[in-house]
Image (cartoon, rainbow, N blue to C red; front, side, top):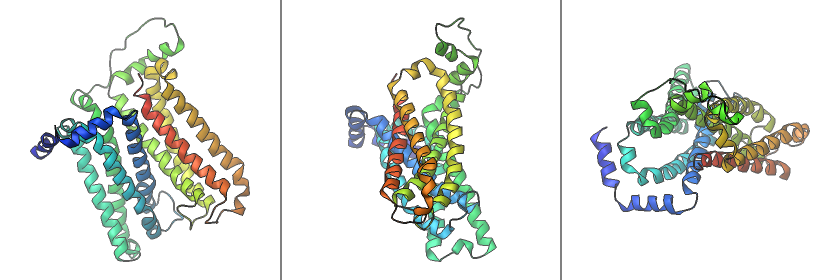
Length: 345
């Protein structure tokens, strides 16, 4: 590790900042999973803002939206999300400074994050400096796409390394397979699931942090893409675009990310199937996930039939606002319950 990083860790260790962070983490009931959820929701907003903008620049998503308008509309959400993540991440950073500033994965995360922010800021400032700056000629269009591709890659690496900070030993002592232990006949089906060779391989090797990293990124993408539609339903964002078109462009990303989340989630579930099903946090997560799904089904198969009445309306009807707010609350609850699962053993 660079001396610069280790010196910061030494400076913060034992300081009043560490004392304050540790007091909050240890004293406030449920504070660690709550602040972790805030951090992940911030990542979701990043996914729904700058990642979607990068995908739009690359011509992969939201093609009906104008890039200059989209840039202007989404950037404030990005800055708020980054500020939120700085505060929420700061509690853990200050609580254990030596752990983070002596961790090479944290250094990698910062080396990915800072260039990603710099590239985003460059794109934004040039867009503000001159209308349609990145669309004026073919050369600038390709420069914009290069920036978007690099930004997208860096943000994925940021999210991935963020999860691997806690799995440093997996990088130091990599293990991708084990000799599977045969426990013989099991007293229950769920315990038998835990002793599948696949379950044991995932639980005891690098596959677990890999699956968790993909799970968190995909979950953030689910919430981030749904967020854009919910904010339109509430009447807080993307008012220039019809709800039907915005939904048509965002929902496929939500579904694809949800499929990935489900597959990776099942991979982690089978490693502790018996304990998960009796875990109150897991039960709440499943319940809230069901409610969020029912809310989405109700919107698409009941309310959506009358879309011609309010499709382009900026001030949406109360019923749509309720559905949008309920969706945000339920998906936030799913994320919170998901973080609590690991805190109830």
